[in-house]
Image 1 (cartoon, rainbow, N blue to C red):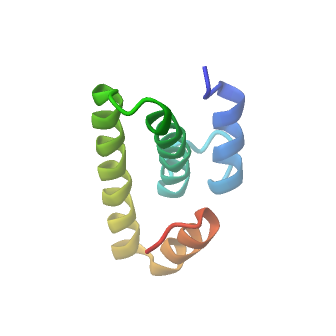
Image 2: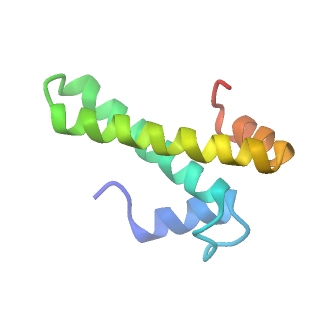
Length: 89
């Protein structure tokens, strides 16, 4: 499995308030970004894997809605997570 519990805790510790803070928008966006990058690499090698493609589109939509929420609530946190993850927004 590419996403172990330790890796999740590392992502949440780096982008959230703590390793146990799994509900923060920043932590969830960082986790979605990690999963999106992994699925993108998988799809480059397996072009006809349409189930994975659908999962990727759904994840991108979830991340976009979380980013929109964060942008409305706190623009400073939004800009910080965009810069930390290197997203193009």
